[in-house]
Amino acid sequence: MKKILVAMLCAVSVQVFAAGPKYLFLFIGDGMSIPQRMTAEEFSRKAGGGSLAMNAMPFSATTRTCSADSLVTDSAAAATAIACGEKTRNHYVGVDPEGAPLYSSATAAKKAGRKVGIITTVTITHATPAGFYAHNKNRGDSYGISLDLAESGFDFFAGGGLDVSERNSKNSKRFKECGDAYEYVKSKGYRIVETKADFFALKPGDGKVLTKFTNGALENAIDADASQPTLAEMVSKGIEMLDGDAGFFMMAEGGRIDWAGHGNDAATNLRDVLALDEAVKVALAFQEKHPDDTLVVVTGDHETGGMSMGFAGTGYALYMDRLANQTMSVGKFEGKVAKMFEKNPGLTFDDIKPVLTKAFGFKFRGPGVADDDPMRLHTAEVKDIRAAFDHDVEFHKSKVEENSQYDGEKRYLLGGACRLVMSHKCGIGWSSGAHTAMPVLTTAKGPFAERFSGFIENCDISKIMKGFYE
Image (cartoon, rainbow, N blue to C red; front, side, top):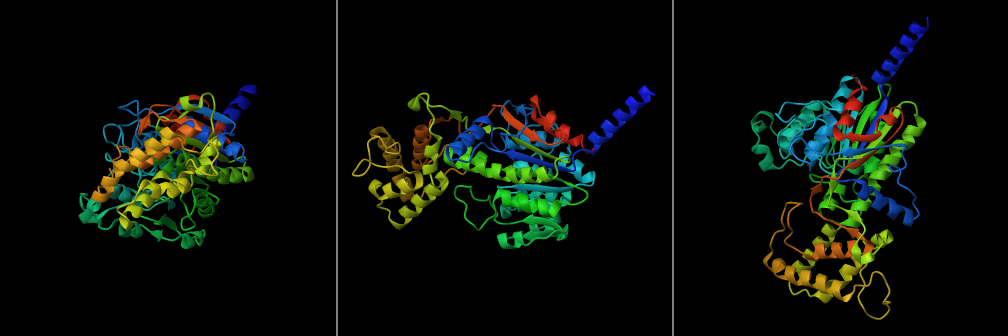
């Protein structure tokens, strides 16, 4: 009788695991490792916001991020590992190292009867979201990836559109067969939503959705206005659209954390981490209402920028609160300066001082500025920023285009000089403009959250999640 009882209990345990949580949230901070999480944590504490929700989750795992062919992964290989449970080559998305298609935890959830939502702050065809539905040896083939999106049958796609250029489309072998990407998506039963008002007006029962708020990425959190939804708002709407008896799987990405890391822009980086945390709070609020059948997992795909919390110039001190003085991304600042040059090719350094003050909170020696004001620029800092400005003047006059590679060397130097001064004033260091091999942190709360503990590989995340649906 005792053996029978034990066998029955084991069977029940297996059935519970096979069923898995009814609701599963996976949050990915692109380019977010421990330094990014802790910089935002300390900034939040200084501002009175307390600890980040993602950092207060009860279970955590140090997570190795290497790809099949490099210790330093790119986002495509990392997304494939996290989504599909297998390491692949850099630049490959949703396929193994030989190019054979893989299937993701999101696809497994869909086959098991769950609804599926994919959300991001960058383009919906970008590497991280694509890892959950696409199969392509070239992460840059956004046209081919958009066709995979349409054929996935997933229920809810929200983010910055497909990012399909005419050149990209017509270079695809499938263009003659399938035509315009958005028309193809429509032919598969998707409603294309282009405005925030129409997005908020969506109701359950409206069918499959793809947003097209822009053909590029959504704005950085630090630059955002009311014209686009926040990541938290997209997650909230996703819950509304996906909730039901079948349950759902949702992946939500803070994609612009990575872009700010490439640019070594600390203030912009942490604001996007905070925006991701606000979205995590939405999921945790849902989890509190459904504690027994909702799992929330937060991870990063890799670290970007080689961020460190500590810089020789500040000794054993950090001043995260100084980052509050920056009111716009370095990219937006550079755009403002470019427009000023368009209007006035004879622009001088004195002309842009007010813009430097507005954008970064920098102060210049003069009446009303105390010598010990932490935002006052010292002689060496002024010299570096002015040298960068002088370098850029001729480029602006000649209308030289910036390097389009976000992890490449920049031609214009002013924005870079400013972000470096800002980072050093706060005690933040950077070792790279690209990805690093640093492990990331995975945290979890809810049923089966204890499986995300210890030291794991990024592909283990998918293996655990697929186990819920197989």
